[in-house]
Length: 329
Image (cartoon, rainbow, N blue to C red):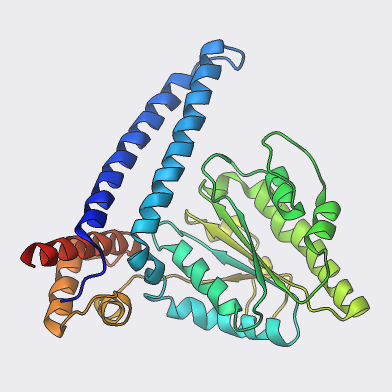
């Protein structure tokens, strides 16, 4: 059987995973030490510096790990988001034909691997334009809680600075939409914190800011004829109770409204979904017997089919399978 990784790479993955676990333990210890210390306490300042260094180290190690696992994780986003694509594809088609904006919302993204869905969505936008410009907000561990000013700074193209109020809605929109051309600006906004505690920022973003941005894009098209388009994807790593948001903000039915939210549904991953992915995208020469055995192994460990559990078990199983095959060789 052909394998995709060397023994050295597999061993390195194991070492990095162990190192990252230790770094997270250290980070939790430092966070506990900060509690109860005043802002001007020299000891707190010292710990905060160590905490920043720890977060940078975690980010670097996780980036290295993602690079090593890339042969599989770069393709795992292809596993199954059929329902989400059924909802998103008509909107993407409209962006190619007549509209300038779309707002997608994904809930419970941690459990259901919403980051894979976002990657899938971004890739599908290339069917509309080859010029897709990404803006990633909330991907960096050092940002902490996302504020209104955080979002505006990123959209305005300023260098991110914590505790700075550098711009307002109108300035950020004008800078975001300049220069005027036929690109698609893809804003990938991620909230690790529970949005039920951040309804203030969510309400501002979904109504005030987004409506202003849509009006500005429509004005650009009417005045200049350019097809500048903006796609905003909000990924919430937690589930948000539906009664916490006005349902009139959400898109329903066939008549698309650029000002409304398009919610993308995520699902459990079934056996056939995993089997199909292994055959088409695992980058391993697996027989039907290999595939069936691996699927049963994965679902014995994760019978619910919860994507975050299937994803972790699948990647671990593929690493172990590679190791076993190289050992047999």
